[in-house]
Structures are given as C-alpha cells and as structure tokens.
Length: 294
Image 1: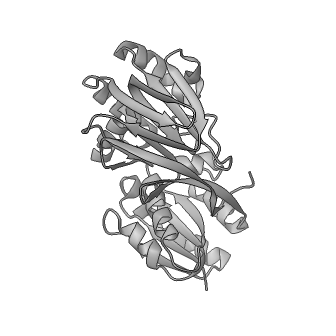
Image 2: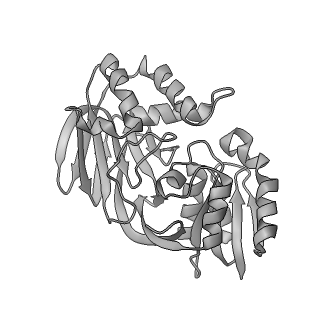
C-alpha cells in the first residue's frame, strides 16, 4: 500500500500549486515515501480521482479549500479503505490548514505530514455532498463568486478585500428563513454562515468559537445593516471581534436549514453550489486528518 496519494490542482492559487510540484517532489524523496501524484484537469475531477485512487495511508489534497472539499467527497465515496486526509496549502485561502494548525506554507505542512499524527474531526453533509470548513448564504457567497472570477495579480486576503469592496456597492440584504433545533426565524440578513472551522476568505474569522471536533456547527447570522456600517465593522472579522455587534447572532447546532431567494448563491468551502438554500448537518469525528494534536 502507498504511503500517500497526492491529488494536485495545478490551477490552485493562480498557479501556485503548479509551481510547487518540484518542491513537493524533493520533499517526498527526503522522507522516502512511496507516493503517487494525480493531477486534476477540471472542476470536480479531484473527487473522481480521490474515489478511485490506489489504497494509501494518506490522501493529500494539494490546493486550496475547494480542492480539499473535492478530495473529501471522493474519500467518503471510496469502497473499503478510508485513508486519512492531509493537505498541502497551495491554494488561495487555505483556511482549513490555517484553522487546523497546519500552517500556510509548504515547509510547515511537510513537517505535519511527516509526523503522521491524526485526529478524528467533524465534517458536514448537505444533500449528498460533504464539506469541511464553512457553508454560507448571502454576501459571503456573492464575494466568493467574485473571487472565483479572479483578480489580476491578486490572491489570498487582498483578493477577498477587493471583492468585498467591489460587490458591496450593489448588494442588498436578503430575506432568509432559518430553522435549527434551537431557532426558527425569518429575517433580513447580510449573510448566514454555518461553520465547522473558524475562518474563511483567507483568514476572516467569521466563527471564532467553531471547533472541528465538538460535534457542533457554529451559526453566525449577520442581520440587516447599512453598507457604511458593514464597512466599518468588516475589519473586525479578521480578529473575530464582530460577534459583539448587536446585529450579529451566533449559536451552535447539529443541523440547520437556510432558505433564501431562488437566485441567492450558496457557498461551501469556497465553491458555489445550487442557489436558493441548503440543509446540512454535522457528522461528528467522521474522518481522520493528518494534523497537529488538538
């Protein structure tokens, strides 16, 4: 059995993943792992590759949060052996690597993988799709759509800030219906984020109280506010200090349904899914991940 299969998205991080191949290969030789590279060619391909990859101890996603989500979905569809997951953060946001203590650069990620320490972590499922980081509806999904279209010469946090400024001019609060075991409400809102991890958007700590092994999802609802007020509060999200605002509600749940206008995009781990709403629930400690001890 292989030590690892590395599924690499060459276009991740605006070519950063492609440029990292030689560095990854050098590291593999240093640790003496028996590995196989698999390269994605289109959206959704990482899921197919992860489903059919040879048996291995670790299935590694080399890319961003979107690539990791695809690899997760493929892993959960595998028959027989379910390998641990790992990540090489060469994408745009790399928020799972950030939240899991893996780090944002290849040397730190290499060190984590070499230790081979695994933790059982929570994931979530929406319909027949799995996600691991943050799902959301509203302004965050609109911003993600703008990010996916790309900014010339800009990636990471800077790209997210530019997207926020660009999209806020035409965005209006949306009416959301939210139902959980603890809450049932209908309200105008800027966004509703459902988090397994603490951050998205390249370090925006939307849910600083989220925990990947507590069996809960963290709901963060940002209510209707003026655009000027939103811009004043926006910098606080990088420190998780926005939770003190009176228009921000947060609570924990095991399952949630969020319904909005039919044309409202839905965001899951940086990728857009079917618009109009989503229903999701947590799957406690459903998969092993190579990461530092919790």
